[in-house]
Image (cartoon, rainbow, N blue to C red; front, side, top):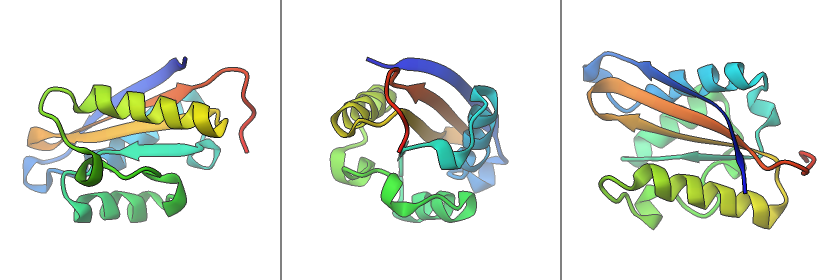
Length: 126
């Protein structure tokens, strides 16, 4: 279905919790040896719309590549299941659209952020 190419966990001060993806996504991309422009789809968990907007703007991501089917506000933010829901959503969309590279990311309580890079092999990026 997909190959887990890299991951990263980064931290920020707890008083600015929610922006961890801004630091985790570049770290995961660097480990996978690709850039943000190579990524076809980003699944960024948004606990709050402003938090997702901040991440998109700060990382200069193409809005059309982020949460194409809606994020946690639209699809749900199930306690203890967010990561699984996001990975499955990302991989299904990548396969449906014939996309190669995807990134999943979320903020974690107390200021951490996590991100992973996934690849669907045998697909050329658009």
